[in-house]
Image (cartoon, rainbow, N blue to C red; front, side, top):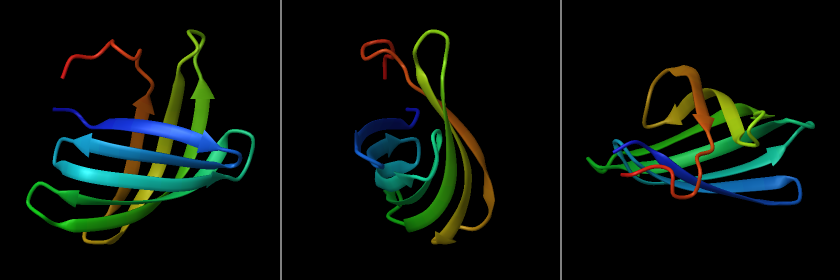
Length: 98
């Protein structure tokens, strides 16, 4: 199963719950630092019970079709090593079969 996120926003703060892939359960908390940028912290427990945490800088974009996407420059701060980039895009509510 691919990783799925559920995001919501309250003013300049945004949040998410996520699961899938190797992640049993995870959470994000972040804040907007610009019109389409933000910083965030994330943590999760994996299916093999490893606790991990990291931080990221996010850039948000709105597609011509009206879908929100997020590009992340991330790094682990606990439980994992390394850094990288990831890209996520909103899907229609019933557009993905898991």
